Length: 380
Image 1 (spheres, helix red, strand yellow):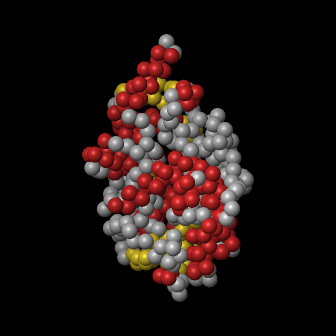
Image 2: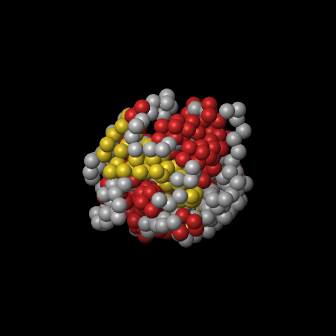
Image 3: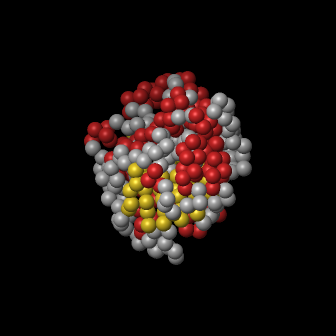
């Protein structure tokens, strides 16, 4: 199962997606996007990682003007319009390129450190009308129970000085620091920008450009057919959101000037493990046999499967049943699972063969066969 440490480590792989030349060449693209009622001048901090390019693409199609601020170390995709690029480094406090400029909206994608928000606020306060911050469901103090909502208690920072934490100290103690520093980053956003703040807390973000392979493991494995090891009893809930749904909703929140805090988890129905696997099979075709393996067996074997978390896990058991009612009421919509799977596989199969051969999450076929053999032997 995936812990906060795994989330952070695997999430860092998403940066690799920025090296890809295209981000929208998927099977379901091509639907016309209408223009917004009022064009906005949007600043995106980051913008070349996983979901950022989807924000840029959608914003341009809606008729908005887009400026990106980042270190300039990742190649930008081919945008469907003109994008202004500013460079700096939030690690060193180099925000000079933002000084003296005004934007209607700022979307902060990559921040995990409170001082990044503080420094941005000191430069942008009074020059930005609306600040949208991408957070995480890891901010919640207790992730073990279903029904977590936006008012649930947040993780408490127990270090010496949150503003002195860096990317290095975060990596060194990610399990204890990630959620609490994200929570403090949210608080700093409100301190700097007052009531003009939107906090979005996603869970697992999936779809084309996802280099973590956390969800990709499942449609990739289902496409191979045969006997597949499925953790739990098949009804354990999971939550995923297509990166395009998240990115496009962020732009719509900016257009409507919607403020507040929202859990960006999907879909808008309860999705169990078996339903997810069969949903992948509906796209890939082929024969498939599901063998359900208990959480206790996987724990004994010291093996975890991505996306799935046992509902009985004391720390993360609620991650598959986080309340998304508030976000849906605020206009969050979800592509069909089949669309996400189709487009994800089309993107993944366009990667180099050596990349496809080694996934960044999940287990190998040999390991799966070993586990299935041990499971069957144990159960007669």
